[in-house]
Image 1 (cartoon, one colour):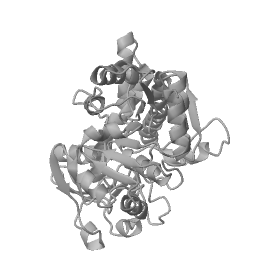
Image 2 (cartoon, helix red, strand yellow):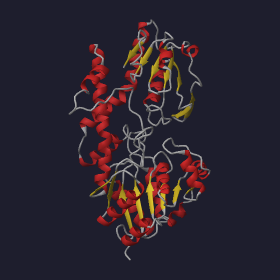
Image 3 (cartoon, one colour):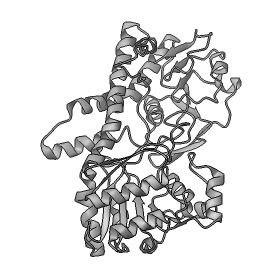
Image 4 (cartoon, one colour):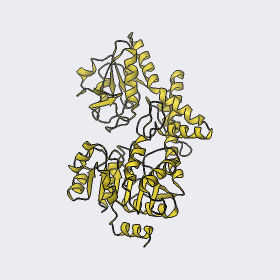
Length: 439
């Protein structure tokens, strides 16, 4: 029996043993889905705390159902470990580790490289390895393949299969989760593409779209998020212009989206946040320079979006000026530090930059976020208010809304008489707008 035939048989009779490297926002939901569909799954992570929580059935990811995790761990279908020697026990392993930017805004692929090295030492013949972490085109073939071959002594395509399938995780999305979001798969060789796609079809409800090679899948993921980056950059620039012209950008967008074709609504804000959209264009522009190509449109949108936290504070200063107050010494309350509404994820949140910019002006800043009681930024922990009442709000000179959480009483905030700078248009339905200004 060939390697391909053996793997197909294991998929069909569900004896294929699954592995996931990295138990974060991407990895844990994927591990849970694999186990829920009848495949024994092992999660690998270098953080002992995460491993202990998983093995205790304690969930720490919003998109995972607590009872699902508890049941899968109790039944032995899912376990976690820091011992990478157990990689030799799995037939399929997905790499789902962070791919941040370094201090020079260049790709930091150290987590991907280190994970691949650890896997290579214990990789056995007949294993499928799939990178899911967002990265620049060429990573799978130029970085992952040589490390796996050198570390294991095995040959890609003959002894093991290698592919790339970009994660598509939208924390807090009430409709699309890991299980029902369409998946893209690109692999080295037709056999690898066929078998890896078959694995995903066996555990996911969404469509699996197979492309010709990993580089196409890698570029596809970059395109998804660069598309959003550019369009958000466009609407942020329009918001700045509309403010100068005395036009309500939010009303403009509402009018434009009545067109049933040729327009998709994007909205302005204090900047970009999350694990992909603010980062992916940097990966592409960095890789493009290798080919003597400058992604001018992409880089322009990045410049606009990166400046929005500063613009937010500038607008806040003008609001305070109308009340004969200076930013220096004023008390500013920021509502929301999560990067999007109703989640506890603050990765790359623009609100953190906004707070930092306020500090630079000498403003005394505090925050309230019902989902994020504390956050870590630039190596330091920051703790927010534990409650939001009228008496609390009235202690501040300005309130800045940076995240549109649905469980915050914005009407109460507006009725306190304190100037409100709404960067998310969350106060749109309030009748009392005398003290409200919208981005």
